[in-house]
Image (cartoon, rainbow, N blue to C red; front, side, top):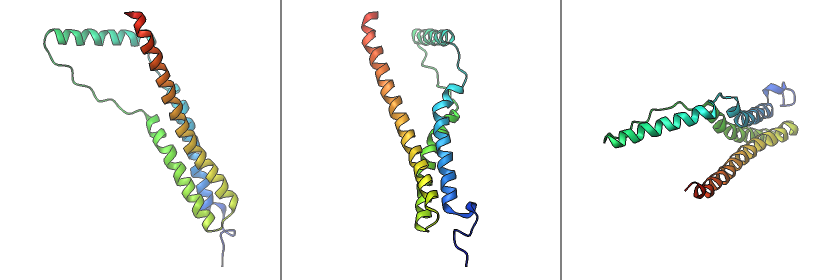
Length: 149
């Protein structure tokens, strides 16, 4: 009779739990760094595009035409990484639980739980940081609007 310790490491639940947790952590880091890797136009060209859009919108309103229909845009690949990271983290924790129930090597279950839980935690914390910074930025912009008028 063969036991889980007699099998190769790739044939255990714990091994796949660790691999899934590691992949989840990699996706979290890709989610954080990904937007910096995408090319973006310069600030001057973005301001010019906004001014052109405002001019076209004002012209359409002046002539009585309705607003232009919105063009669908493709979803960036970083959104997929942001969704997949916590899902894979949960899968890693579940696989670690299965590994622990089957009494496989406890280290696999511990490592996978750490990696999967860390991926979930970092993903949630990253979004919380982004929300707080966005609120701070919007607050600063709204407070400074009074200086313009």
